[in-house]
Image (cartoon, rainbow, N blue to C red; front, side):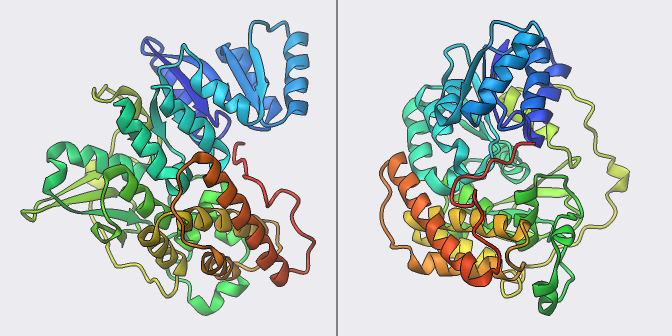
Length: 403
């Protein structure tokens, strides 16, 4: 029986993980949950799963949850809150496996502490590796525990790599759907609406990651994540636009052989793979091979989607630059979602923040968080210059994407 902690239990990855647990009760047990700010969902999950620990973002929400559970006759659950609560969820002594699914840097400290505590971690939070990948991967090597990717692209790479040794890898190909604006002229980007940007053609995701897909920043983060996970330079990680999203990633070996992984576009499959690795267990998540009729591929347009170019530049620079990239993106995307800036302003703000961020080596999680906070303040100043609205009250802090 594998005992599971979920950081981000009310978001899409968290709910999909709970669905897997429900379908395989003989294999998995929920031990602890971090449920964000959604008190209603937290009450429901507490009643259904009876975790040892349940954490929310604020002390006020934790107090409300405690009172509601008491009224419902639910007892025996430790209620925590904030960053310390997330760490408590991730490092609980009974936990074997931690699913890291809090979007943004809000789950960074808890993920790092889970690795330090010797837990096996399944990463659905790419920002952890973008901001602190060098620290997290080094600690995972020290502990001798794998970091198992849940992102569909990196999960696909992980599966393909079982067909060869790392020293035999020539390059990794990460596929991108191209997002909702693949065929939209760049001249129209300034007038694009939030609703249009949230209309992803393939995946159902949280709001921030959907906007990141529309700008291709999400793919840029995945480039950095792949470099960290598989210890490859940015020059060995290529992005290719594949609108059908059938092939999730490919690995090219030195002899010219290419292995590709394709499956249904359902996040439960990579979650199941990570939770059961190195086993494979039977599921009903079947891909209809008869539908495999037409596959399109094209190189990404980095002039039209400059966020991808900026991510490659940050990956090459390393240190503080990837941290600033993620922080500026969180602030800019939040401002766009609130109607404060235009879609076309997002890469402008990110590029300005990167230019103002000093290159430096990062040696601790504390330094990561300090660099992140400074980059957010810089991004806020650039947002304010482009917006007639007052500053967003939450934009300078890590954004919780639970639902």
